[in-house]
Image (cartoon, rainbow, N blue to C red; front, top):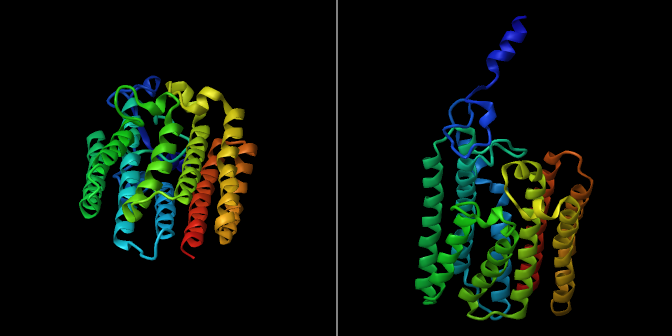
Length: 325
């Protein structure tokens, strides 16, 4: 009896009407009072496991730039990396805020979000996202000033706008099956080619090929994420591409997004034979594909997400080595 009472005492207390769990009004959703927020909670909300998707295109783009000449532009390369990482963290907090106030994250398979849990005020999460966007913008402006590529200010503004409207605004494109399109453009083409351009002022063939590969890996991660959340997204009306095309088509598309980059690798290897070392990335990619096809519980896809991100990073490292070797 005492043990039973102790378990009840330690359980998080839920306030609010459970019938209104999916309400878009944060004041009407249940709030889980699980103690004060910790640094670990903030780190978790930053979703550091997604950072390989920000790092990979910069690594590829820097390698492609180096392949055009003998000089390394390390300062600009590191600045590009800072922009990519800051934007990635910013969009993660922006998603936490936007999905939280809509009630999309009220019931999750993945880690709990700050806004949806009620442990942090929505405004605080929003301000955090804006701070990271501002930092990314500041570093981006510094790159523009250093390279005198003023037209790239428009590219930077487009990146921040796209980051916000993925789940923000009245009609976020992530809720209408367009997430993968924008992810391919910004995490693939823009991030990779932009990195190459500000260092080499050229866009060689290898930069385009690497950009396509980086974009496909980023799309694969988003597909796995949305496959994990497909049931919850259907309930709350979030029409991701996965919701629109269903599980089986998503599994097929995920497989293509993971494997096509290795077809691109074969073409790159005709010019840079050492690029074949990139096949080692399949050691992470193939298990991710296997999980996506055989999973029984949605939480298993969390591992597929991590493996796909690792695949992208290993692949990027191989291309960098090939381009600079």
